[in-house]
Length: 168
Image 1 (cartoon, rainbow, N blue to C red):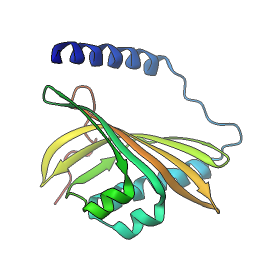
Image 2 (tube, rainbow, N blue to C red; image 1 turned 60 degrees about the horizontal axis):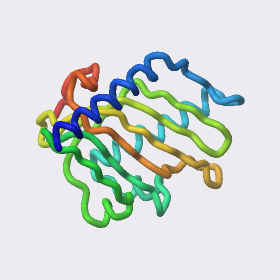
Image 3 (cartoon, one colour; image 1 turned 120 degrees about the horizontal axis):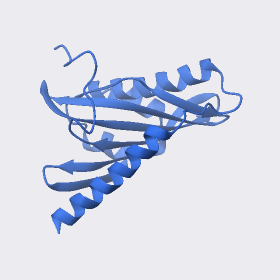
Image 4 (cartoon, helix red, strand yellow; image 1 turned 90 degrees about the horizontal axis):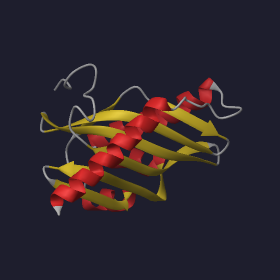
């Protein structure tokens, strides 16, 4: 059963890789560079807040109903989690350092998506990498996260941060 599930994940990953490799980046009509920089700054701030347990910033940059979810493999086991940012904050955030790099942003009016590779370290030790996706909404002139979804992978399926491991 597990081998069929892994084979299915491998087929989906291969299909996604083909689509991603052939995709042409699209900039939403009317998007300004400043809009892209603004939403990327919010995504970076969210990662920094998660890495430093800055719950005040997490509350400020997310909506009450912000969804957080991850999917991927841990060893031979497929992992799927889906919860709210508020429940993560209430439960207490684990200690880790997560760093995004090479972000891409699409902005159209009141909505935006930021896609960026990331790597994650726990206790100074390598854990995993993957892709973070942030869906943002512009509410009363401020960008706030509606969702943060991510993959859980290991190289070569994903890349480590180009600057190497984080410094203590």
